[in-house]
Picture 1 (cartoon, one colour):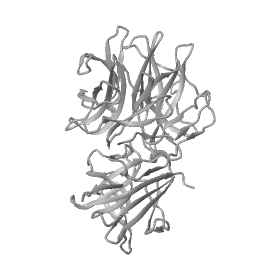
Picture 2 (cartoon, rainbow, N blue to C red):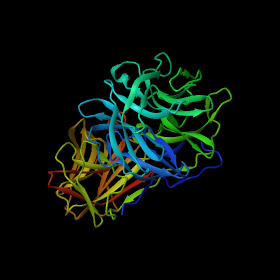
Picture 3 (tube, rainbow, N blue to C red):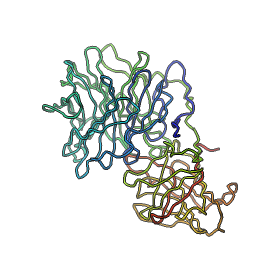
Picture 4 (cartoon, rainbow, N blue to C red):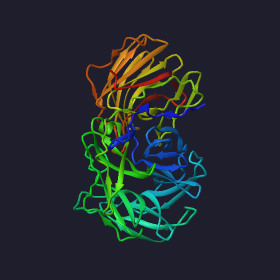
Length: 499
């Protein structure tokens, strides 16, 4: 029986939430949240990782459990870049608006629906596919109750301004109708630079409010921030706040943006993402929560004064003994290569692949300092069985065992380089270890008894090449060999912030 994945062991909070408080540690970009009944449901961008879009649930916005995914298999029309799911609830039904790359085309906005938040979800396909790309959808009703879809034209990808559009949508969410209306666009002379995106809306008293992101979202050179706009009519005219950006980085977090507004006990919160300044791109854009209030002059103010001592615990060490009858929900794989695997009798069997760095499975990393261990059954393994730091299918750093030899391989931009290799006596079991510091300084070890580990190379390997611009590093296992081969793993363990 597959068990839900508990993301956070404990979060302690007083009567006031911490300003920019971490609630989803690890790679959870563009988080979206909605309350259905007495439970909060959330999802986030998975980009080129599958399964697509996690389903997380919580009773308090703080403690989150992953209980499934919106798409267990890819929608038939799309192939990659699964971005920005917006999970919503209306008239007893759950709708998820999302963006993905259309096969043979560009980015499109699409929608899926379910009768209950845990699914199953039925995909209804694309709603909007502009030539430059369409992303970041959000549904909103106007002052007359008409349903609209709000989205961003991804024109920054072709070095053009980025309009935020609105267009009427039918109640079945299967088609847009009428003509589109521009609400606002980026101001290149301001902090917004080359784009605005990630709009979330709420109606309060006389105004519609849009919380949006501007500037550069991702990577070490990101410049993201949060702005506010308002209008007395959904279709405008819209007015941007003179004090924008209203949310920027602080001593701990950088480049905040792209989230969803949600209420709890009569208070208003914004769930969004930002980079931890210490682990940065290596742990990715993590999910944060901040309280906001409506001001007397008709704007929104984020509660920067709500700071209490940061007592959050985000180090739930992971130990997978592969004793369940299915793979844990922690595991992910590339949308370009669905691995063939099975879990049976305390072992994970991963079918080999001769391509690139082979077949792989990965898990999110939660801090910049961690140790990963795996146990390889060498007798049952016919493929090279390895432990890896994974950026994507063309950028992986790993140590693997096959036929009495342990090797450290760097696959950068699809090209293999052997960094170290050592012959060892054949054993029934080999233990591999990966030690990571600062998210990128990586060292590999092996052991024949699981107690004494020997380093495979003299100096740390620089893994700064690993993460793609919109994703973070995963730690995982690989199987490299012919399709009829397999690597067999008996244990996988991640220890965060080891002493």
